[in-house]
Image 1 (cartoon, rainbow, N blue to C red):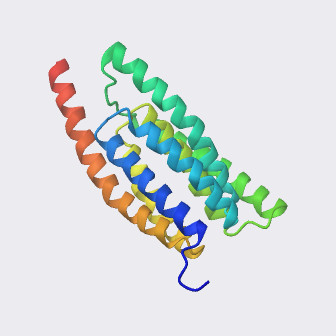
Image 2: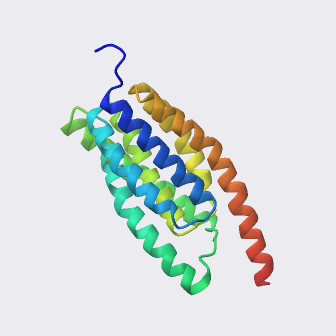
Image 3: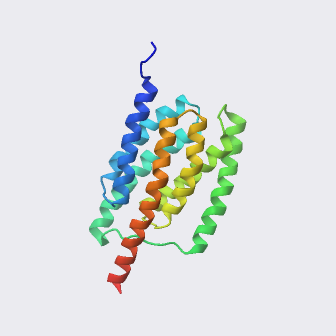
Length: 197
């Protein structure tokens, strides 16, 4: 019927709200962020299967597991040492970029060869580097926000290309929030560094 909102759109809207709450609470370093991230990821899996972005569906499945780990780790770290923000040396980032690129090429080739996926190489790159950026979130590495800013710009185009326009807008918001997240975490990192001296 004309004018009816599709179930895909409703799921996309609810997932968008959950994912926005996740990122806002993550920036504020609130442990509740992980519950919203898990809920948003579960809903996202359905959307990506329906739009044939299979690597994205797998990614969001992994986000569910990583969200559970993040929730546990942050809870444990808060009890041990207040869960501080850390920085990685530059050489760690070079190795992460090299390894992530190699894995992305392999995944992109496999998905292209064995499925009917759309944009398999780009989808693979955003998938692998999103996992890396999520690991950096869980371990509270400051540079996670730089990874996310770049990933968000690429992912915004990918989602728009697959007619997931609400998600494209969400990722556009993520791009702005990534800048806020970096500035807020950098300020917190500098404060904790000055206190520990």
